[in-house]
Length: 462
Image (cartoon, rainbow, N blue to C red):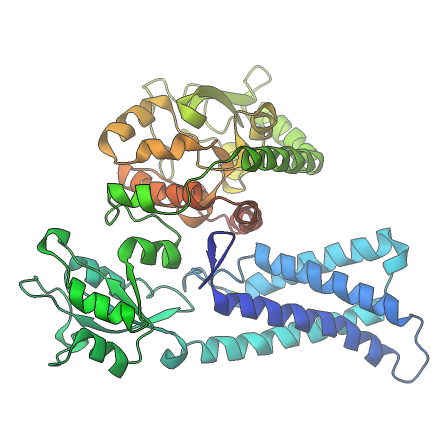
């Protein structure tokens, strides 16, 4: 994992992106060479280079938007052929549109056809080798865990559902008088120092997973390892890097004081505001026909007198309340019995509402909240005051998510399912705190691109 503008990115998938972008570039370049193998080319070298750059950029962006470089893509979510086919379909449409809208970049259909075949075959070949060799343990980060309790046990399953496992646990070192929850086969049983064990196993990193910090840590042994060149990190940092969360079960108040991040400068706020306005205007220009058709569909289903929009008070930045605007997706009297979470197969949701929720179309009117400054395009999901009051009392650090403006989409929205319980709220708070801590324009752009995957695949909508 590497850190780019404070956000952790899988180095393996970053290299995969680079290799496939190169494949896409040369697919177009070789396509033109094959097409004009026995006759003079119609295009200059500069024409082919420009066309190849456009082809590579568009197809790479489509792959990013379909989650094909997301490390935490689960095995159950993974459908390579479906995702690649959809990505190529969108890519072909965009490339053709650009080539024909801008004649300077026009490429013959025969050249484009051959290039697409080369690109698809090249990508499949790269993916075959990537998924085959990325499973080899010796090329992963080797981790030694100090501790054998419940927190250590949780690390065993951390990588289990991922296609690409970025680290391998070489073993666990039990502490004296600690309740062991680890399989004995995974325990390091040697009469050697921690430093010697780390050297024997070629360890890259030592992770502290101690259930009770009050019992004390083996500071002398850990210092010996640190001074010998081994990285030693705590669970909060480990989860932040590997899962993109601030782990609430492992965090402690002093961590917030001394950790980097959580900085909101004036210049950064201005940059984010300009980015919000630009993205919102672009989305509004593209989405207004969809918004018009949605309005008509709601009126047809519910009647001409039924409201199209739904306004609701939500908590914004610095605990200021505002009215969020959404397309109405439930029956008019949905909350006659008081505020409540939306549930799976909620009978209050209309037929049109079920569709627009699945595609996230119901969120589009929030563009106007962004333009008025109540919301940001990217940020934590805005919650209702009735819920927030209780969450602040019962959930530690919940109020910290209101240090930034709420967003139409966000790190928690694309990383976790729709929250329908207080436990879900805690899990999503961990993602929200990661965003508040590590905000950057790069992270916002990454979230927006991955939101396309959520819309296309319908993940997390309810």
